[in-house]
Length: 270
Figure 1 (cartoon, rainbow, N blue to C red):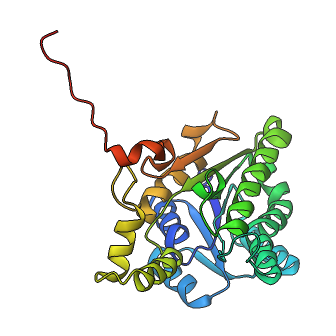
Figure 2 (cartoon, rainbow, N blue to C red):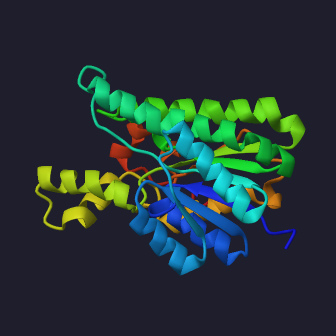
Figure 3 (cartoon, one colour):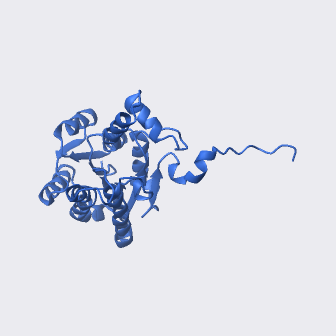
């Protein structure tokens, strides 16, 4: 069908990427999921009918083969979801050079390589790009130098796309989630649970990490996927270069007021 969009989702085997693939397939679009591990990709492919392509997004040859396979399978490429990412802890004085380079190569250089390869097809389709960054691109946390820097740079990469190619019909936007229950987030939560000796394990760690979030809980992958799906869709046709926080309100919070637990009550007798 000519109105079926073809969307390539990196990191599509788990978490936000898998939820996005499910959503797009449910809407009737064709989806290619990519990642380094074949097992989760094949599971999503069996579940949804998406096309699974094992690919190392940091390898230019793999990236070229990935785009070629997507276009060969479906004849076009309308959308790109830049979701694959890694994190390594450490302040500036502590993070190793190897970890810094791994994070930058995966979270920034890999999207750049894929965008360059996919760009002619996206322009031909007047398509859309959505990058999955993080609230870490907007707010600093402790021991997060490499990840936060890479995600902040990803915002600018998408902004450059919007400015340079918007007149040709290409849209590029970014979503910035806070804590979302995913396989990737479970790992630091497990470390927090162990370090803080939380009896409830990972569940308690998520509760502790989101204690100041106005929503009072972590997000779910499907909630971020819904935002991504909207940004890819014609309903967002005039949204370009935007940064959408999907964070339960945490970036709206002034942490200096959190200790007061302020509540505004309606005045009476007026």
